[in-house]
Image (cartoon, rainbow, N blue to C red; front, top):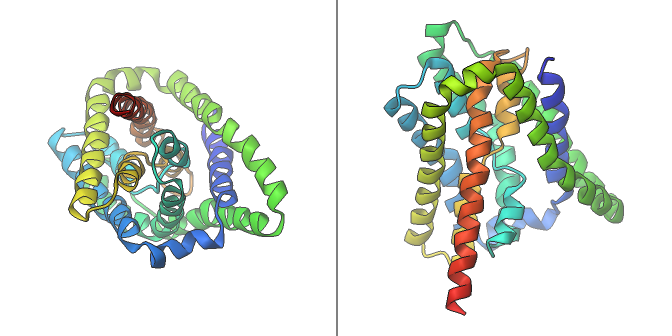
Length: 286
């Protein structure tokens, strides 16, 4: 089974669902509250790729795995980050806005960074990036579904709410299905690479979360904003990374997607632990 036929509808669904949660007012937050938006975007757009590059080099990942970890770092925030922010007592409005801004900005920054990555390590394994194809794919699979979701929310609010309630329940089972299919097809590679990739993905997530927390503290954001920043920077859209890796228009290499599969697993484990620790600490302070 070609996993691209599973991941494409999943990514489109996730992007459409992000659009359903957005309102025009969500984009005004950059004027009303610029500091948390700037902190979140700096963490995701600038620091996360630098962290991923450093970790990939430190762990001496193979060229294909190095490209995979950089794909994750160049992806926007995951749609589940809004739910995790709510569970952690974070600022959900800020989370939604950061997901929206990162989804739009990485449409263009992602191809630029990945072009540098492909030039740096891709030649060793005969991997090249058709940057035009990636830009077009991003617009079709990400920008258009988000725009369609925003339009439906603006024109048919009740219908958009009903659809969102359905899609948010489907998102996690769909990702589990994708991970299962990937594991069945590439179990030997995943098992052999898991010790290195499991550790490097965990270090990536924890370092990104720490970086987000430090940035928030430096700029004196409040606790709710800080927790939101930590989650947004620590939770990237693994489905997009898998799509780019598997797409016949871009890399067309499922091995590059394996880091994203392992990242998705470690991301949920680490962030659920983070939410649990927050609840324990909060209950003790009451």
